[in-house]
Amino acid sequence: MQAVEIYTTPLCGYCHAAKRLLREKGADFTEIDLAAEPDRRAEMMGRAGGRRTVPQVFVGETHVGGCDELYALDRAGGLDALLNGG
Image (tube, rainbow, N blue to C red):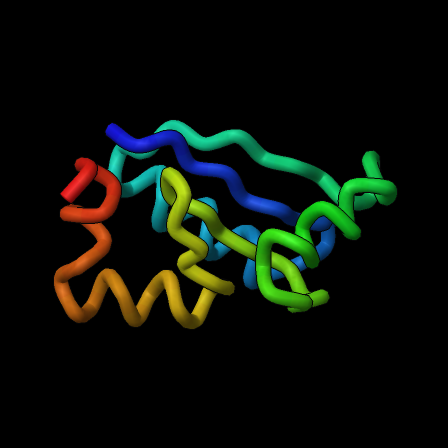
């Protein structure tokens, strides 16, 4: 399974929903809490093409986007393949 990284903040409902979907898919992920590590927001923005909102999800080297994009990818049938390296 591909490495997954997700940038989050603790009070973000969209972050919780994105993490819940990843857990349902059996994906292990590294969570980067921007409240605990605010200096990493610039890193996230650089990787996410300037996006400032959380969550921002990365599967391998692919920037999936936020929660809405993650769920849309799953509905389209592409999330499982991406997680499995396809």
